[in-house]
Each structure stands twice: as C-alpha cells, then as structure tokens.
Length: 145
Image (cartoon, rainbow, N blue to C red):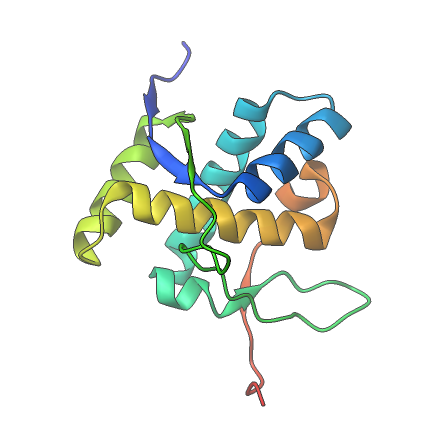
C-alpha cells in the first residue's frame, strides 16, 4: 500500500529552486522528488534536534572536515521574491511538521521552508542525495568564535 501524500505549500527563493533543479537533473530525478526527499530527511533530523533553533546549530560531520555550523534563514538575504512550490510528503511528516509549527508559534510553510533550506545546505555538503541519506546530524560541540 502506498502511503498517503499531503501537499505542503511554501515559497522558496529562485536561487534555491534553481539549485534544486540542477541537483535533480544531475541525479536524474524530478524536482518534486528531490524536494520531497529533502523535506522528509530534514524532518527526521528536526525531530532528532527537537526544535528549529537547535537544528540551525547542527551540521553533517564529514570525514575530512569538522562539522560546520549551519545558519539557514527563511528570509532571503537579497530579498528575492519567493516562488511557490507544493511538494508532497508522507502523512506522518506533514502531521509532525504541523505539530512542531504550532509548538514554535510558526505556520507549516515557515517550518517547511526552513527545513528545505537547511536540508539543501546539508545536501551541498555531502554532494549527492545518496550520501545525504546516510548521514544524521549532530550538534556542533565547539563554541563558534
């Protein structure tokens, strides 16, 4: 049985959309597949971190480098207009993000945008969706100077 999918309507920066499209093309996937994968993987990491603020302090520990702090922002630093997108995610991911959004006094789109942006940063660090799926985040242990 195929799990039921729920749409999450959100807006993303054009540069992020272009990067997602390039990654999808490079890996022979659709844009929707990559967005869904990033949202679902990011949600799993968000559950482990416990809150969006804690997620921002997490990064992927790479074998050849120290984990780098990630500072995803929902608002574009260049104030680019956001483009709409509606990826489908599993029901448990949709419900979990919705609960987290309520708990943090945000709406579902805000949490989804943050998770997608943060997950794309992680994808850049790993280089491919296959490698991304093997990683779990961990808090940065050293102080940022």
